[in-house]
Image (cartoon, rainbow, N blue to C red; front, side, top):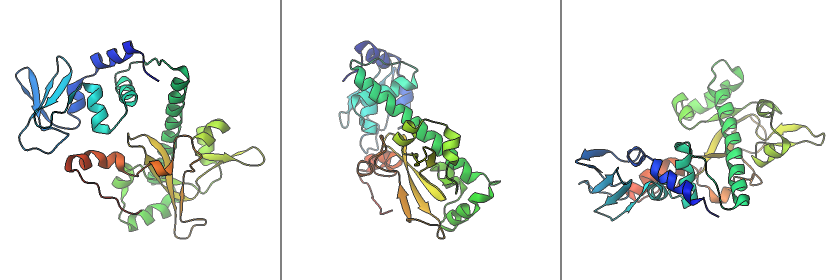
Length: 264
């Protein structure tokens, strides 16, 4: 599967490589080029140069080189298509694919990610709304564990109300989409129900930062299993393929060449 060559060329031409790279390292204008510390290896003297005119970078220390697409691939550990899609989205460039089936599959994934993102926002607002008394026990429990409002906002921590269908009612999506996103189920009478109820929710993000699932923790007096994750039956989530927090830790881990993995 591939992206039409003309679209790839347009992404390369219209991507601002300086804006992209300065999200990961500081650059200083030196003559016609830009220079800074290399984001791919540790160094104290800047050896990383970027040419805005031809849209390419080169490191004299580790020989890393390429264009905007290659930079995003290396810095975020993406495949070629994913890197092009991200840059295209940032620049408002529609993409065409050489394989219509693959195009449909990728568009479907984007739809489900958007649905999970809506759920993340819904649950997060339920938790941080100080006028919502139902979430007070959850807020107090988090505070006892050292997690304040700033942390809840940073990591989009949420609260699933003790209701059968509060999220379903909010989303108003088809049964197929609800099941595919792993956000709910269908009862024997054909009605929709929420997958998570009366739980603190920790959104799970892909390595690229897309919300794809939840990890739910019951309160001490709550019922059911202590932990409950989105089912592997969801189309965009596989527990064995995801490391929680990698989307936040990967840049620093790559910089220092070390990653500390902790038990939940």
